[in-house]
Image 1: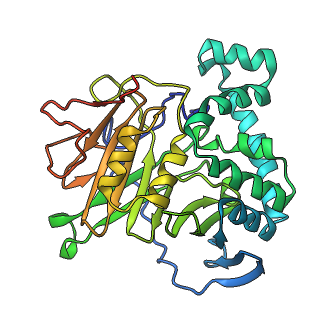
Image 2 (image 1 turned 30 degrees about the vertical axis):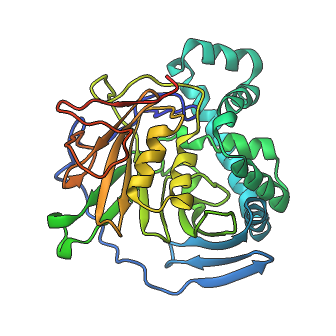
Length: 353
């Protein structure tokens, strides 16, 4: 089945656990041990260092970058002058194939737009719709990568819509309190990309050391040259997760929009700028949200986690002792004032709508 998001504003069906269905009791377990080997140094440039970690067949890149948004991007591009162009070309071709195969699933106006002006220009139009809600520093970092790796900025920007063009069956869990040993907060995110796509060849853990006022170091887990966040952890013990939702309905999900900040940039802002899970709740509540998703934020300091039923016009906070995307919510004190709870739950509405 084709799971298609085109931009972060377009809904499609992406499998998620528990809201509809349950885990397969006969699923194959993961017998592989946690990697504890030391990363192997690859190279350094001004503002960055590159390493290769993991064991044979399970290797991934580890990158440390320092400075402003542009400087961190330029360091990334300079560290991988061969790998990032390869990733960009292969991912773009994959993206084109996904859109062509799923054109009939798109809204008619969007399919017509692609037919009339082509995929590249159509994506540029949709990027322009997100730009007013997206921090300029994201585009500055993309420009840095483009300059450092000598790749096309526009193509790189378009490929950053790959978060909404996936064949992933993703999973997540957050557990705390009585659900864990010693009451510690644990969070897991399974980023199950299409194993036939290009993603498996460019797995990356990027450690950011930003000098932007108000920012703090964080780790972004994804692929080389991709600056949006699907999962990661910050130096202030915040972790984020994201999965799609199979069957959004009005119980937990509202309208969708093509004008807002892509969710991969919302999640990254949480890692880079927020200090507690309550900051993240406030950010998600006030963001110009886009598509239907289920998100998770864990906080090791507060020893708790939250799940979110996320859409353009509404946001539900899912609070249970263990969240998985079970679509449950109860009252909880200490949350920002702009969130309300009731039973059955009432979504928080964006002030702009």
